[in-house]
Image 1 (cartoon, rainbow, N blue to C red):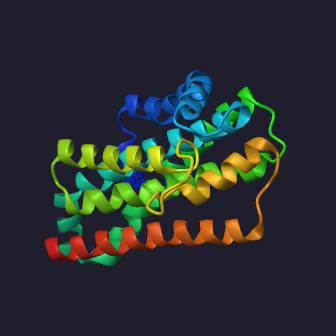
Image 2 (cartoon, rainbow, N blue to C red):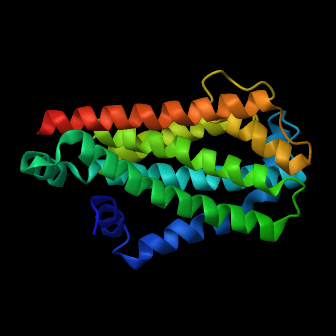
Length: 231
């Protein structure tokens, strides 16, 4: 068994973890889309209907992936130190941890996207699927980065939640004018476009790919550095 598979299996040993990974995105999409539309209009946004349902899938996948990424990084400090000292090296340990977290993020994104397909009819389903996955990958990077520098579970979980809430309420779904620090705004633009049936221009896809790459590469660099400092 590879290190990546072992790390992923470590997180999924508890059946309840898999239930949360799949159940939370599905439940959030099914239960909250209409409420989100009403709340967004109260804040000055025009989010409604299929756009609200689409964005709820992205947010659900983002929160689950970010939380899983945090615990993957923060709970591994002792094991990573021993692996690095045994000859695996900090970079390879970090790559395996991030790859295992990617598996979890894909599962969360797939659950949210499946719930979205069952709830709505999308004109651009593959655009929506890619955007939901982008949400998950961006927040996977956020979770791994926070887990690399914060050891305490409570403080780290609150930090992930703070970033998530700040992003949600300053992004295209809720704010009339999205803030520059809304890290998922490009993913939200693509996902809202898919929900409205309008698609997205190539420039949005390029910018979204850049944001995802920065999130993953940045989290890998910080995680590898923290693993080296622990070795």
